[in-house]
Image (tube, rainbow, N blue to C red; front, side, top):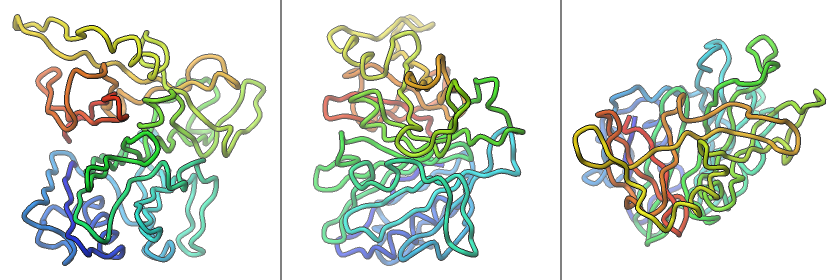
Length: 310
């Protein structure tokens, strides 16, 4: 699913939340959205199902919890609390578990409740939120008054599943193979993802700030280093039709302080890729293998990612 959700000046936090939850749980008819929705400028395309269901309608004031199954363990879920109660932001809090009776969660992913890593909204002026989701991920990117993405490094953010690459990281062992990611921070520093819980090389459990990931972009080193290395030359490559195309690099996650080697990767399971800086504009459509991808700016220096137009 992908959507451009536009809201009117004077929109309420409750209505914005209601509309986002509706879209992320499968609503495809713009006319069913709230009075805060700018319906002529809102679109919902559902080529692939949104993949998320409502888990707790009372997760807090102006907050609701969603869940989506894991790829290799459909009986276990990723949990995200969508929260619009903090003025000026849509917050996506990522948890390992969420109890819909007590309205509480366990192992909140670090920074997933910090406003600087979240998407900005306004209840004063009109704006838009771009949404992408499948059962594997949930991504939001905001735009109003020329402000794109999060207030920290101006990028999209959300919850994303990864592949399991470590021998101990099995379904039976019960480790959560997903994380909160701020793509703006990832593009700027390379460090932009935090898991609810991971293991170290000494088999200790990490949560909170230490359960962090740095993104590696294919053979290019860290994602931020890739952008720096490729910023000064034309990075388009020949295609099979005598033209050129923009290369896409897979994103692998590592934690250099606590585990040698990768924990898994994002790209094959979520179909989200790093691309060189400056080869496309924000919200461009590019193709790979005949499939449409939308480019998303993830830093004020035009560092970019591409997400499948799902």
